[in-house]
Image (cartoon, rainbow, N blue to C red):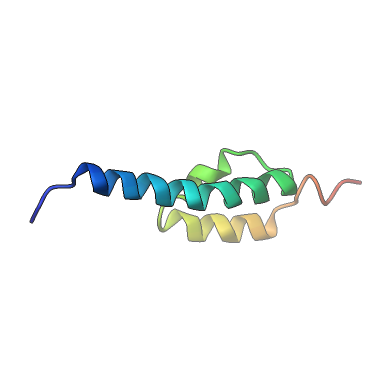
Length: 64
């Protein structure tokens, strides 16, 4: 097996940025902390985070 090269690292960073920007905007619009973004970028944890986010109160939407 070959080692990861600079190009592999660059592709990983690009994919994370391309996924992180829209997720961050969605979290901001729903009134949640940007720290949720970390959970969405971890494979496996992201599925749990989606379910949790679907059922918690959204501060920007559920204001009294």
